[in-house]
Image (cartoon, rainbow, N blue to C red):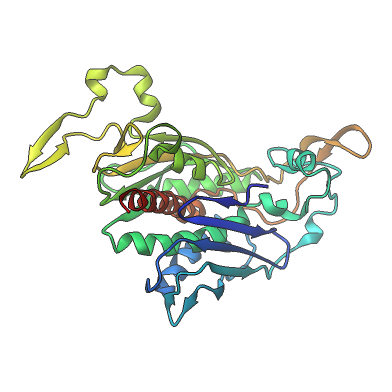
Length: 342
């Protein structure tokens, strides 16, 4: 299983949704970096479950316990390892084990991939629960990047049929979309836009390690992400080069782009403008409506009604996850560039 990512900034995740704990190991950040754990906790809380009717009722404090790599509030330069205990598991909600795979989930594909030895409770290692340690690791990296003048922020630009309001941002109708789907025992998807500002030109590489490739790789690792675009993205397919190209100019001795249709990267390398990308989140796969599936034990068609506590929409809780994945990718690019200069 590919539980480790990165060459210059190495991240390893472990655990299952209903196991005793989940966690992460992060290696590559410099010794002496001061970490604001209150800021880490703020991002963890944004992702945590149990935030009202628009999220799952599962209650988890998501308080990371750092086992190594940090001493007196500063990183030691050795691998940082942190665990997050699972305290509110309801494994009884999954009595069918792997007899009836849940539509839209990785139950069936995971069962095949791991030869029937996977932990099926709550999705096991495939669960969105595993994004909690990702947010912890990403929160450390973003503090390092903030020290270099980089800021990362994500927001919902669509939930179902509701889109953000020009000049106002968040549309209250988004919450109404979620509550309506919940009342119908259904779920709803959406689109997240993320902007990384303050980046220097020159991060990334052509082809396989392009800025877009690294970010997209990590975004598609997030459960529920089914599409990614940069800048104008798919809209470019109906446009002309004269509309898409970003004109350049010299402003106070500095090269600037007069528009940002490319989303801050050219040839896989950042161009000094804001890095802008969007990720599409599918509607949550776990819905309480009866659904057609199969019984693997009986070898016949079946109907499954999923029990348990599930988000009617994962967009809002995914915001810090997307930000964290962006931080990890940008941290990798930054360290790769530093290595090229060494």
